[in-house]
Length: 388
Image 1 (cartoon, rainbow, N blue to C red):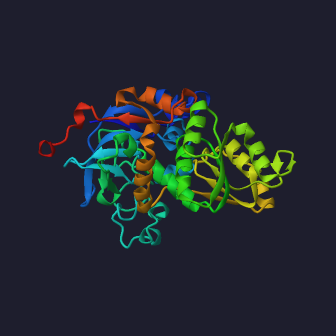
Image 2: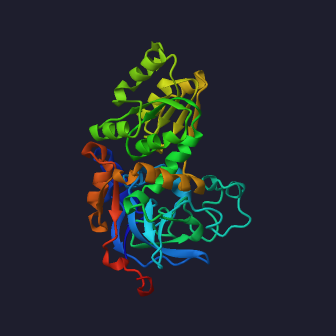
């Protein structure tokens, strides 16, 4: 079958790091990812099934991997070669349409007894992500044993699958997973005035999810591109400003003074949906004393931020990773209510993966939000005769 495969090839990885620094997405052309003919992954154990991909999204962590910008922290919890793709809607062999919960937990790994976090329905905090009968991998899409959504088919444990209601389009369904991430982040955010830095897919979905937390007020969004501004307004932002104007907007609403680039007051919550040096530094400069900075965007490996404001102003810095199954149920309802599938701007066949990754890496500047791979018309994807 056809699949995009990311291999451990250090020379190509280094080339991707150089190219991606100058042209986002260029790692797809010079790095260790390629379209290959591979065998379908084997079912690891009882309780596993095969899923045939319909749509699979391209997210920020995928782009960071392709451009060699991801942290070495992930090396022990990723196995090579792997097929990326964790935002997925696909079909089971009986024709059932499903969305994937990609986290590989104690249950999927056949580990008993399960860790305390899995027992408490906190799979995003699982302690066994490199053990059990699977190769290491924090999620499907970063694990050699499972395959991923950027291939014709992959395997998943039954506990990872959520049935997609008939009234949701495939475009809606492929956004269930990132919407669940956003809902988790919003659930961690305490009441108060809230700023969101970034208006790509993560930022817009976090804004959309904010309606589920009635304690959030005066939501100001920093959006760089015209299409992002339009979407942020439609999804309910109180105010939308260019990134450079965010400190002034927060200052005006809070009547803060300013010393250098640091507000003396600030917003109660700042949600960073980018994770860059600049965005983290800006978050620390506009958050109120004893406020909360929540990292939803994945930071890079070379982040160098002055943490003095965090110490001096007793700011809490937290991360928001993944979700629980309950977040998936809530995501289905939110996607349905807001018709979030509209954020899927374009889709590409696997054969055009370089174009797809280039589009995703430069989505904001090109007026796009979410880019996905579309495997619905791939000849190899045909379901077994009994499912027709």
